[in-house]
Image (cartoon, rainbow, N blue to C red; front, side, top):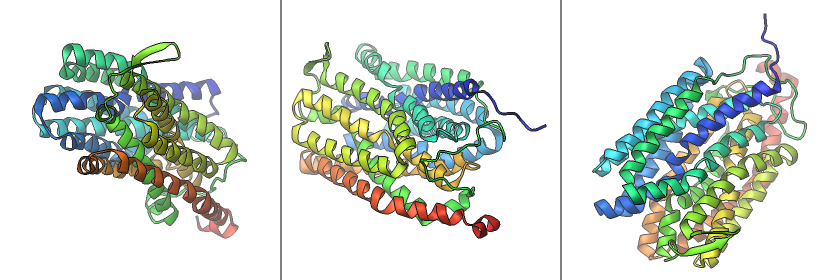
Length: 425
């Protein structure tokens, strides 16, 4: 007997489980910036050498997602997320004992593999459970990763300050990994017939399911990949260097008062950035469900380019640093809802986790640029050129979204709708 359609409540519960798991891995990426100055102070290593640990984390978080997603598509999400949660904890425990760069690199590689397994599985599961609200569902899930670190900005900094960065790595690593494992046991993927069959009339969606090997042969996939790299690099640079930038500008420890709260610049900026980086994902995912993916990309990428340029102009002022860094993260985080949704709209639902995982490897490629941004900063003695290049790249991606991707994708989907194309499929 074929499975019957499940209730919306059950679908939202599955989404909630995924969000909780995403919250628990958020610090693995967004908390790293707080550890860098203390690691540098303790061991005296060059900052760009330390940041290679962050790059390795992102590389292994992203480039192995297609492999992990293949296991999800074949065996279901539960096993993958349980194993990945264990790896997340092990990675930070290794960091807590690390005394060499190689050991930090190893810890970040293991944590990256674990984080990628959780991230790719939860986003892929959301795409499958919500074909009718794909942008919103992917955005809410990705928001857990973007905003999940907001509540722990102050606790992590407190523990680093009071007990050292090793203790912060150890206790947060074990706690976060354990919670992922517990909630992973409640996670299941949808069976055929359990989800709505309706499609969103506002979105151009394919009627064909592309296998991953076919996707890699599609030129439009590589256009999306390029855009992901271009936009992702600027946000990752800001994520890894938020505190170092503020420190180099001499404003990181200055207290500022906004919204009735008083915090140091870096604490305030990091907290607001995490919140806005989370809110942007479901918000612009929902917007894209109504006005189209490419139109939303055009708006967001242009806003990010403007935000980075204004950060270059006015960021030396403590209040403007807090405001503009928040704007940058708000205009950046939506890529983690827009690109997976666009990928599934273009290449179908059957292999959604694997195909979205292939596109997600662009984040790892973008991470390769982060150490070179540090090198450029050291060679020029300022962050000015780094910020100007990042702003220009985002404006270029905005133009590509509306002028190239939108008409090209419409043509690809239209050709797949023709009777002869359906017969061949």
